[in-house]
Length: 168
Image (cartoon, rainbow, N blue to C red; front, side, top):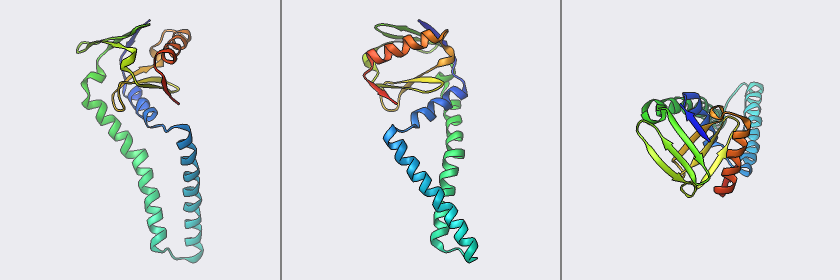
């Protein structure tokens, strides 16, 4: 199966968010902590409104929440755009020839034969697959580049068969 891939900024941002997505246990712990922050935030606002006074501890708490919001919703998107602009290879058209033995990757700058044992893990998101060669180096395969749903299913089966670590 051959895929012609031209990564867009949206594909890259989706891959980065998928890369940051935690494992299920960590995700549930994070949800509990987020709920505690939300309750604490509204309690702090309510209590300050009732007392007509805000102490330093509450101010620090509100500052931490504001920092996290800015970090995730302003800093990360800017960082992802900057990385995409800086990385010329990401913007080149690539051809992935997916075979039982591995993946042949070709672009104007790269020709590589990657056997399946070059990949240590993989993740699947709603819009794309990520294949990791190490914890930081990944190949991005958007699902919209597959010809049919059947090709996506066949690719997923190849991944399950050949790359043991599947990150959910």
